[in-house]
Image (tube, rainbow, N blue to C red; front, side, top):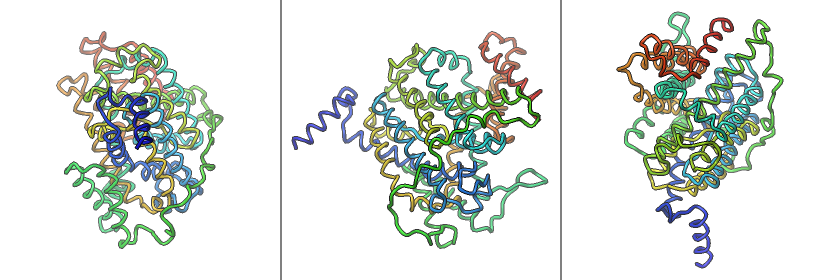
Amino acid sequence: MVKNNEKRGFLDNFFKLKENGTSVKTEVIAGITTFITMAYIIFVNPSILMQAGMNAKGLLGTQAVKAGLSIANDPVIGAVFVATILSSVAATLVMGLFANVPFALSAGMGMNAFFTFYVVLTLHYSWQAALSLALISGIINIVITATKLRILIIKAIPQSLRSAIGAGIGLFIAIIGMENGGIVTKSSDTLITLGNFKDPGVILTVIGIVIIAILMSRGVKGAILIGIIATTIIGIPMGITNISNLKTIVQMPPSLAPTFMKLDFAGLLKPGTDGNIISILTGLITVILAFSLADMFDAIGTLIGTGTKTGIFKEDDFEKSNGGFKTKFERALFADAIGTTLGSFLGTSTITTYVESASGISEGGKTGLTSTVVAILFLVSLFFAPIIGIVPSQATAPALIIVGALMIGSVTKVNFEDFSEAFPAFMTIAIMPFTYSISNGIAAGFIFYPITKIVVGKAKEVHPLMYIIGFLFLLRFAFFMG
């Protein structure tokens, strides 16, 4: 009893539990809740990044999916699994121990898709070079967090475009999920068309969507994770979930060696299609900008959106920030940037603050103890690679579609009554899935926003930085693409 009281006393003092009106029990429950709601990333992230060639065979896109590669039978995918978890643990611990706020971090949905389907599959960078780009963006965000530059960028980009970026990424993720699950396929006549609904894989994907949708509608915590597990089990008698090689449930984690420190900075300067150095540099700047901005606004949106509702942050905290790490908000952003940097070294795409943290906050989580509990649970999951490895793509595809549906909700913050705000936002949202590129969507929004504001006589409402970035994007489309 004495030792227990001493532990409680230490936790109370370190995390300031009484000061924040919470308790060890409440924080632990909140941490478990947050982990359950975001643990799906353990399954989903390797399934996305393996399509970037992060597999032993170097297969890209749907070839990797059709080959049946997984954590269980591929050492590189196993390393991605470990990198995802270790990055989540490290970043979430920084969030909890340094910032003392109840937010958890892991590989960002949307950013892993950007990494795979745009940087690697569209721009043809190697996954090693893509990790280098993610590292650079993480370092940039650390610098931005430590200076006033972050405030300048935040104020420069209008709310409508910030919201549109999130919604566009949501649609992009959804179409990736539909493709991975076979719900839509390529068509020479209509670009995409419905898949074969007699195919067992497609049927299983639909079952997964229905299960998760029902659970989400009922407000069941951990709906996505439960849906993935249920779909995987249903896939066993259907012959889709392969358990023939499952000999144990718990074992030592796979080796991290295949992805650890596999950065390739030289690969960033690979010749473009025309060997034009300007084309190479503008492409690099565009990708790094997309990585940095998407991660930054993801973090800001999650921290402000969930933190202000519970009093963890004040509404104007980020506006009053003058750089450095004086406030909890600044330290939280620092944890987010640190996560991406660590993730790049370990072998995973951009790490970001998870909106699912709101589930734990709703259970009363108010301090970094909640985050610390999440980190511990992530660490424990390292030893369950065998069972995680049997999860088929048809079980993770529904998760992508549902997450896409959740992300598109940010579109409600766009003022559709004002066409000068609505059209740039629409272009941002539409271009992303239609061109299979998050970067193109961001570029479209940055180009059209200044134009629509100028023609309605509101040019002064546009921040000078928007004109500069919009012009650079315009030059990119005009001279360096196609």
